[in-house]
Image (cartoon, rainbow, N blue to C red; front, side, top):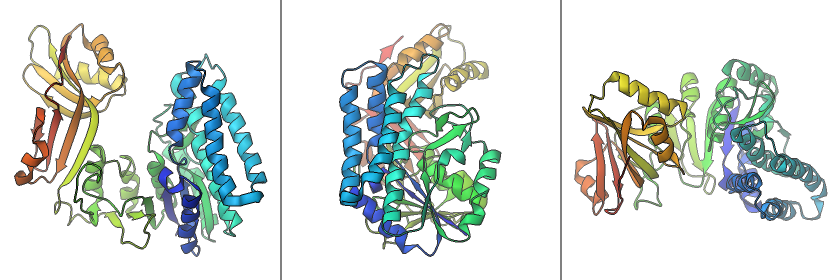
Length: 430
């Protein structure tokens, strides 16, 4: 049975990181490996900036394009020395295609379509370099185009998987994986039935790995991170974090739903359906014992987990005629949220109003007012933080919210949530 490995951007951010990935993969050279790789370092962010420059006719487009080329050429130069001419030639073709795609005015296409065509180059470039290095050091590596295997609908930037077609395509690899070797492909990207490149949403490489693991009945999926495993909090936000040695699929889904960034929210279900264990290991210290996500739930409630989501928008919506917030009005509001592809991180209702906490983005509050303002009044506070605590300890709650203004609090048997901000976080009423 094949094993599936996923390496994120930090694990291929420079030449030394690529060498480190190769050392890890070489350790498992006796196994059949499907290796999923993300864009290098912060390339996805850089491509988003490039696209913004292209669509706004900014004068720095050429400078941004040159920066992307230089970053990747520096990696190939450090890896291959004087033997990188062939790799750079292949890279040049990709960069030329990227520049043409980004700079052409596709007036008949949506921005989301263009986003997928441009940003997907990050993964195509990174896997070209990594596969070339693995072959260079003598490993049996075959580079695959994920778009030949992962088939989606046409919802760009958050495509839905056509599981029947994708599984049929990926099963074609099954005979190949039984004889060993490394099959390297991209995370994050797929192809719609009309031939357009699609993406699965930011951080979607985890989900890509789960798709391949599910369809191949893999023995395990390992996600390689720059942390020693799954921690109970972001070490940048809290001191003395603790590693979660084992949690269940359901607990992992809860954590991902509330915003834990260690795992993409869609990753778990394909694994749970086939009872495939997920290991989270450190690519910096691969000898460390990993965190395990599986069907075992004995340890789920042993430790509290803390999840912080910044840049939140708290919106309270009420009817202008003081009617009850009944099922009909809730259906109207949530119907608009669904059409706008807005995910609610917290929901609370009262007799006369509905409060929601959502990820903020530029102009979102005004868009909600435009959609709902004729029938409802809206109050909103931007720039807030949503703190979620799973399996909370009452004795530690005070320390978490000390000195902060609480805009909303909600608790259940297992989960406590606070929407917090500074005391000067002004409310806007429309």
